[in-house]
Image 1 (cartoon, rainbow, N blue to C red):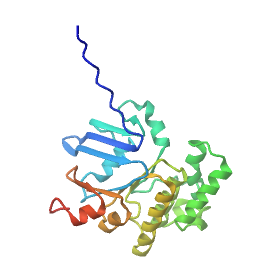
Image 2: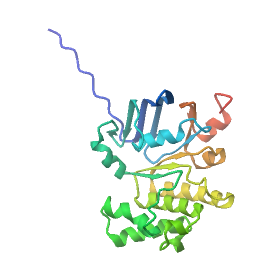
Image 3: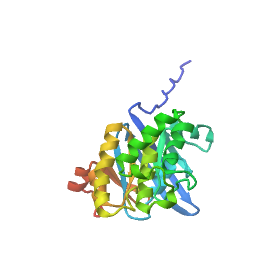
Image 4: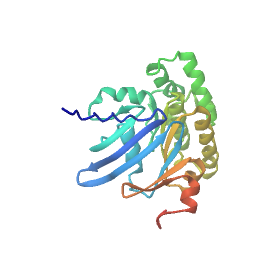
Length: 249
């Protein structure tokens, strides 16, 4: 009697950091993300761009499991995100995220905010965690604010603290949700280049959300342009710029 050969299990390549397959997300009746397919390679800087309401922020919140997708697959560093929460802490310990709206702990100093996760999640010695935090506070140009509290800083300064805090964990995957939106034009331009240099030097996989086209073109290895919750074109900045597939692109 003939036996049907078993199909080999599909495995995500070791070179792939994040794999999203046929992913859908609803808010009630509103279909916010539609059949999203996206592969992010290790060490790659990919920018999620598109108009307001296209699902950019929701997409990276799903990657960090702050939002739950209803169908399809999201695999982060070989771990599939499902409604079973047992692997979520493992994934989050390897992911740093900068939110569009600040979520710094108001009762902790800036330095304490930046060392909390390295010490308690990564189990890094306090002195080493503080040295790393000061390194990244210097990179974002606010080392002199280390002993102040968030309430004593401006919005732009707090946003830079968010970036330093995420980088201080030395994450395998860095999720940035419009991290420069509260900065003035001059500092925004400086920080674009700094983010690119930091991410390239650290080798972190970076998924960066922005609606700013110049930001997308200057930071990305590839851009995924969303419209109505679905990527309409994914490619290098040069490919999107010189060979747009749609009028929107």
